[in-house]
Length: 285
Image (tube, rainbow, N blue to C red; front, side, top):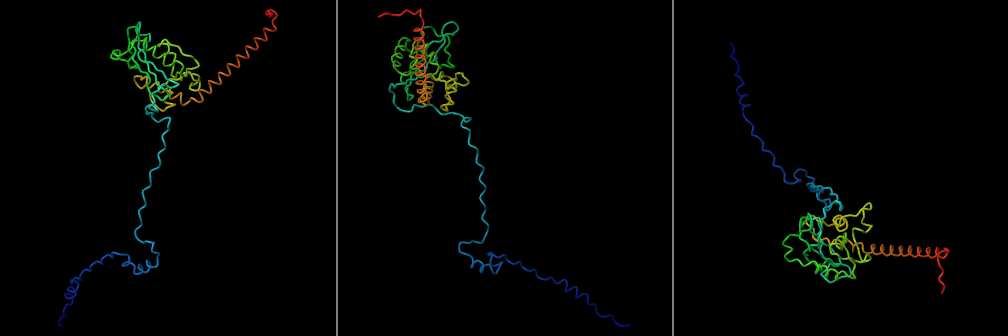
């Protein structure tokens, strides 16, 4: 029997079991020239101002512009301040009074404080007043008057005389001045009164408006939020008047001319009627 040839499986297996060494990964190039050999040549051909590299980040889009607030809807919070340091007695003075309740149930109003400011908004007179009757209701929530204020109050007759002297011959500005003049027991020529509650331009559907409403619209200020301040109220009336002074005075002049024209026309018709009336006696000179 012939002998079998030696098996070649063992060496083949040995050859396969021999492990080949792992190749090390190529290090990544730090520059673009390692990836592309033509990079340097391409970059040399470009203008010096051109830069090839990472794309710049775009700036974040700016937020859309917010709509501007409506000035009418915006909260008004400006404080009324004098427009000058001048405390002289100007041609126009603004008056405001605060009242307390006297009489049965405090239903009758009596003067408790009076304030006058000049055309610059500076105080020229500000006094607490002791009413001639016993105070029943201080009306503090509106008037701001408290019992302690009566300790330094002046007699009504003294204050009345002072105010009368100050406003004589001057334009008197205020809001619903007939109330103030009534508690002062004073009068004033109608031609010299500028009342913000009576000016036709300020009326809404023919109705008078409050000083608080007018101040918010005309001056963009909030007044009379709680207790009333006569200084603030007098200033508001004066500044509203000054804002519309030109048109206001022109309107008064036009009304005066119109009334005079009607008066003359009425007198002329009356004279013509008398001439034709046979019952009118003729005066012989």
